[in-house]
Length: 73
Image 1: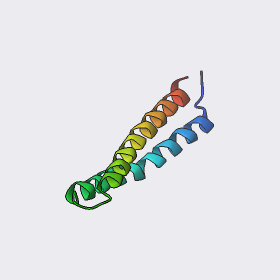
Image 2 (image 1 turned 90 degrees about the vertical axis):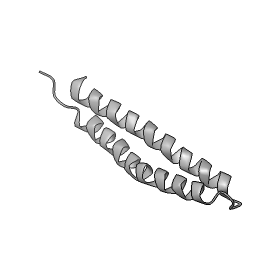
Image 3 (image 1 turned 45 degrees about the vertical axis):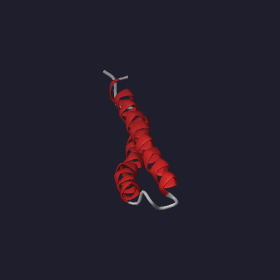
């Protein structure tokens, strides 16, 4: 009978904890960018919001994959 790898489980939870602020930050920044299209920093804020979304997706994927490895591998 295999046991859960607690170190790997902790690493997966850290990935998910890192994704949480990005999932909250991304929509707020994008909302701000789309409502201030005439602002000179529009493109920079839009890119930052999109990078926050992409970072959140990547960290969620890595976190879930790491947790699944810890539980079932």
